[in-house]
Image (cartoon, rainbow, N blue to C red; front, side, top):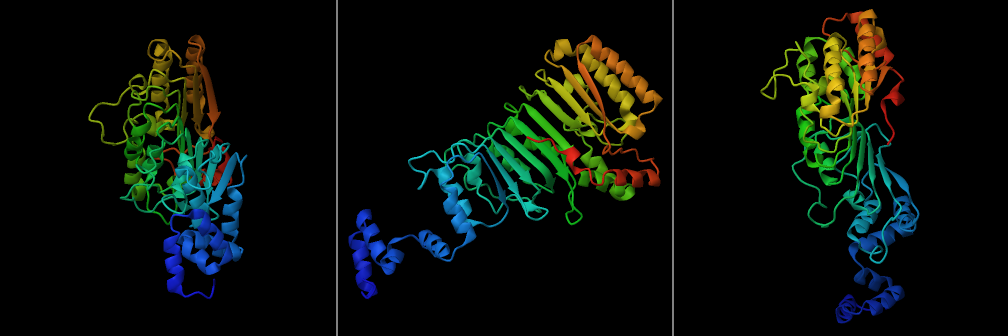
Length: 405
């Protein structure tokens, strides 16, 4: 067969085009017929397997892992590995007759380096696997916003069943909304905003709030934090150089009243309420709202991080009002957590905490006050040596900023 002219082989292929069994038999008899009958992708697979490609053999092994419960994938342009997940999402061979990865519940995308671009290098089919409920991204980064949409949106006709997204940290990620939009059943979202010296990125709370619109009716748990890298950058670059940036990333996100099923909220002080006397123009065209106007009736617990020391009295006053009236406005509210910076807790602050504790006890609300060594005050009057000590305090404490999913 290998000695037959190309023209004759081509005629033979056209003659048996509708007979897959005969094609398979002839492909096993001749490599020339095999290359003629098989698709270009199949030929590439075969070539890489013969060359003992690690990626190709891992891809083959992946299809045999029927009891896989979690997987961690490194970023890269892994064509063969990605094609496995794409075929699984589309129910193509070898997943036509069986449920693909029926026990795979958690997928972690991690880079061998410090970051990776979230819009390339991995399969979007991961979001559409039948058992996957948690997607975790470590070191997400995108330098420029994309104009295009994912290939799987509007093509598969399938709905993503992912209920939890954990992104820690997010470096300059301007395409965050694509992850959220892909998960129509999203219930839990944790985002830790980071920053890098090589990326000119400042967190935009207004843009982040827009990203949350697709999950307003499903989101039950929202956690927004500043990663240690962002806090260190803020502490080291104080002054006029970054003052305007501070104004932007300290904007409040606005009302969460439309999040009808939101039960747990963890938010920075500055992003939860508009801080007084910060020279921030009101982006919502109205006076600052009380917590009762901002929070949904379904809320059960509220966690406030990075409490700004100079505005602590105003915060306590707002929280006292919230606790006293929660039976009417938030009947299921039961837990309040505050993260304070230990060095800023003096006699006056201790008195305020004691008073708030008394109010919480009367209203059957559990109050927890924790010492937050990472809390970055935005008091522009603090001294240079104070800023230096704050930066040193953040070194080596990465683990304390991440909540495991």
